[in-house]
Length: 288
Image (tube, rainbow, N blue to C red; front, side, top):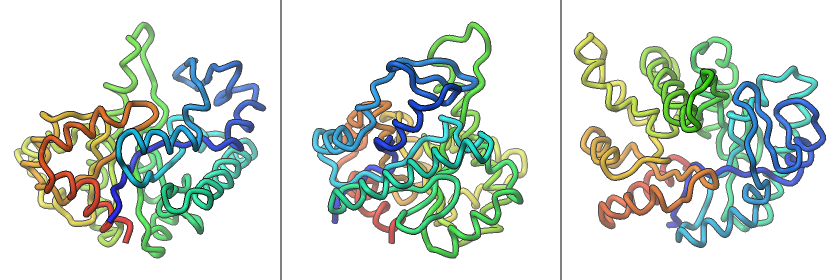
């Protein structure tokens, strides 16, 4: 069985061209990515391209990347006439990448399930209103693919340090999404497989507190729920493995935002059985 990185971002050439053609966020101008409301960031689009993705896999010793376009760009928040050209550019380019790589790249669609994609990525904030996104979730469940929940655009207070969005806002978004799913989603869609990025923002660390307030933590052990490891190291993984065992955790890197080895090396430090579970067995079950 191949090994998988479930959390790898790809910007196909078509998407880069569409972002470069825009004059308002999200847009690319001379190597600067402008986002609303986060601000501007220097970025090399080639680092998010297909060849860079394959190079990342080779360096990490991973066989397959499940790629996506991050909701942090805020594309789905644009008016339909602005969002659709960007969504179409990503979807067309992602399918070309899948076709060109003989199985080394699989892709997630954005916001809605589509043919040719193994799952669908949504912003964490979407789970705050399950009725609104119910048609998409119903379709994901009907198709037998999976849902990947990822942070959306961050709101950073004035004067906050550069790490604020990733460490404070993104994790808060994920904890809220995870709590919403435990409260209402898992019962409504018991067959829908869901992966929460970045260990659901550390939400499993709150399960004892949830239980002390009368919450049913057995829902967190539902067999359709998974957490990806992106950005976390051995101490966080130890707690999650002690809580869930290895069955509900999958390896995800958040490359190229982060070096894939940042989390892969701690995963491998738990030994072959744990590594196989996170990188092979659980992703294979998820992608069945």
